[in-house]
Amino acid sequence: MTTIAARRSVAPVRPRKHSSIDSASPTTYLIALVFVTVCIAPVLYIILGGFRTNAQITTDPAGFPSPWQLGNYADVLANSIFWRQVGNSAISAIFTTVGVVVLGVMASYVIARYTFKGRGAMYSLFAAGLMFPMTVAITPLYILIKNLGLMNSLAGIILPQIAFALPTTIIILVPFLRAIPKELEEAAAIDGTSRLGFFFRMVVPLSVPGVVTTGILAFIGSWNSYMLPLFILNDESTYTLPLGVQAFASQYSVDTAKVLAFTSLSMIPALVFFSLFERRIVGGLTGAVKG
Image (cartoon, rainbow, N blue to C red):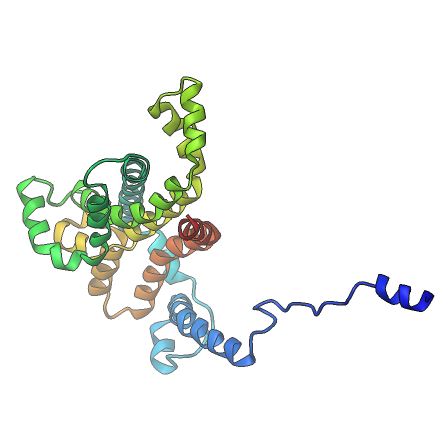
């Protein structure tokens, strides 16, 4: 009897559940490694190419620097045009991000929390904006900016970038704002908080993950924008970095190593920025899906 009671008292051992990472096959890791290599190899080639001479690149295009040359990067960093273009890209990206975040949060709040006729149509209209690339609208956009007198100015690229980034921002933020319990808003109203006060005191802090995600995407998109500045900016003093890379490559087409150094320094800020906030982007998108 004692043995039977002891057997009954012992809890059955349940098999340990393996996570998806543990159950991944070697083939999965191999495929992932191939994709990572394909993505990273061109970036490494450009960065390492800036540390080589033109003779080294011609003799052994896929080789490592031997010896390492720092002069290409030093020449680019000493170039005032490079820093002017960095400043133009930074100004464009910062103002675009601020405009996208402010307008996106306000529009998303109205769509998510207010009930009115045409709300669904408005949301669908913003969603349809995701299927309307800038390449399709570049000609009428060019005419509009020219008529507004914004040609060859940073404002002429900041305003369109805000407009084209708003659909993605609203698609991400609306689920965040809809997920805020209505009971919380009702309790705030009982305490005498207006809708505007509820927006600033509760909605904005609770939607920070989505706001950060949309802000990062807007910043990187503006920093890497090429087609719009190509049509709007004509003066080299107003060029952003992507357009400056093209102009620099045309001017120094014979000096391949220096072009690679200029290209490396142009893309490093975006790579570092994206790497630092990668988890924020994933977390914000996950919250939008759950919402």
